[in-house]
Image 1 (cartoon, helix red, strand yellow):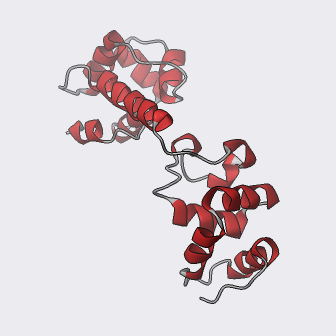
Image 2 (image 1 turned 45 degrees about the vertical axis):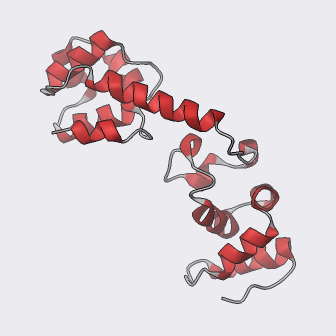
Length: 176
């Protein structure tokens, strides 16, 4: 029933555990009691502060009625491989210290794919970003790419702020 989670390598194990726990209408304390794992450890798993051992994975599977051996351990391993692959890839990333995590409030900041999501990132930064974020975005993507992306936006939502930032930081207007 939950085997599809094994294919989502970009999702942390704690998020999957929390999602399944929620679907089963269990509190963290109830899951702790059923699995005989201390509550704080369950909380640490969900918050991704602690790795799940094979033994704990088996306990959680039994408590949640999952008939897939080392299910959570495999999800955790897949996620760690995903992170290692992305961190060691040749793709460069912008200086993340220039960005507020709140700007990307609706996603896991640490796992943003800066290449695949470039259009969304550029639009978000020019609509809601501060000076540091906008300048880093321009440095990272370059004015040509940013101009191309922003000129293709037809959405009028927050266009006044976006256009003000275009004028201020790129020094020209973009016709949509």
